[in-house]
Length: 163
Image (cartoon, rainbow, N blue to C red; front, side):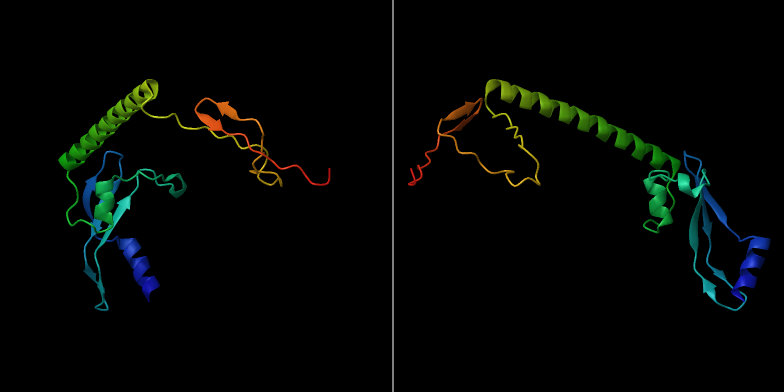
């Protein structure tokens, strides 16, 4: 019987209320709570008609956060255009402030490296391949070695008694 009802609903169309459209062209609708002819109550639905109807071309961010929250029922009222514009400008301000802070941090770090207040990060180079049996085994050297900021003291290896 539900197939017949679905066919009738498609044929006559479901009553849906256009709630809004976003800047990407997506249209948002509300299908109010309805009572079927059998007396069963069908809860209200919120749907989006994508501007790009091809499902495989959907990308994250194709629906603004505010509309996504409304579709998922996390907010009762749909977002207004003013709210969308305000939130978009806030996001842009946060991005520019984050770039400024990152640039200041890089400049401060470079200054500290130059003045010698902070040690430069050690660049370790792995010798060989991880699958090799000799990988990451320290080679003992009798002579002390020094490279830039690191000092490796020499080591003493006892001679074998077979000699």
